[in-house]
Image (cartoon, rainbow, N blue to C red; front, side):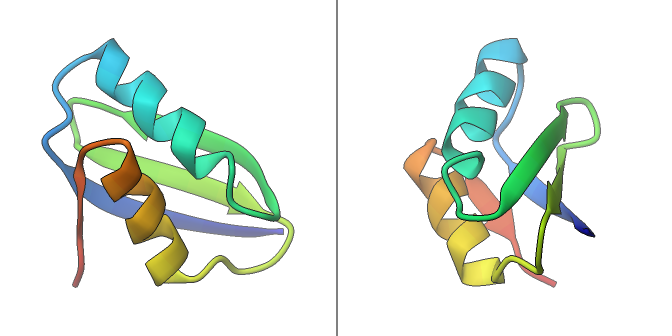
Length: 69
């Protein structure tokens, strides 16, 4: 299992968290998604490492922006 935490800009409520969760769960190999709205973070647990590009695309599809380091 692999776990990664990302910062997401623009999330302000539970609906935001639900939208991000729904899109990120579509990524192959993702088994769990935990969104912390106050911290602006999403933690992804997967069977294998997930590419940052795939996460960025999913977050953008939900209407938010992944903050890259």
